[in-house]
Amino acid sequence: MNEERRRTIIREIDYWQKNKLLPDQYCDFLMNLYKTDEEIGRPSSGWAGRAVSVVNGASGKQWLLAFGIFSVICLVILYFSVFHPVLQTALTLFAVVLLLYFGLKRRRASEPVGLTLIGLGMLTLLVAGIVMLQLHGLDTPMWTALFLTGCGLFWIVFGIAARFPVLHYVGWLAIFLVYAMLLARVGGHPKWYEVQLFWLPASFVFGWFSWFVHRWSKPSSAVLFAAAATLWFMPELYAAFLMGQPPWIQLALIAKIAIGGSLIFALRKQWTVWVA
Image (tube, rainbow, N blue to C red; front, side):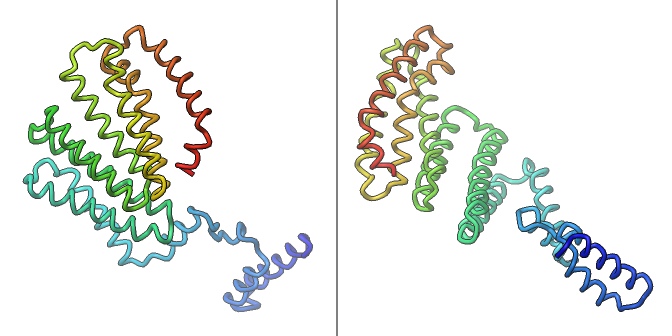
């Protein structure tokens, strides 16, 4: 329809409504026929539009329930430190299980929303656990290492079972972090070649496992390949953060990039089959 004609019709309908020539519901119906979504104020079909639709369609009871849940969450966070350790643990597990349950359930309809809820559940587990260790004087290297190891193993298992490769990879990163903490405590002042020996054998082991499991699970194979690549550069990261950046880091990093790039290029027909 011609734009000028459409606007003329809209002005006529508006005139009818103002002068009560037609009932309001008829005028509103006609307006909806000729006005665009922007003129009506109808929300778009994106995230914001759906959110506005939910907010506009919520009843008073739903608003009251939402504010009640939000208030309870705020109270739990504010007074978490004064709760009994058993109650703290129970609340943490309840929140984590609830987020994981809704994440898995919601993932069937919306992958991003489901993965976000799962990620929030794992983040809740990590943050609440660290806070509890600090509150009860257990933030020692031993307890921190045990907690991170438990989190890492849980993330690995859950990531594999839920087909969430990023979580699977983060679990291995947690294990690597614990290993680095242990090396920093017992390793003393190792030579450059000793630092390489701490990590490089594990890189080759993970690379072999990446090849070994690719016939059963390509996502797990890709995660193990990424973990192997991470371990390849871990000696330099370890030296940079825990050894005061010794002078050999730059040379070792350049050599690693050259060797690693050459290996990836030479074996590209093999490893691409493992991960793709």
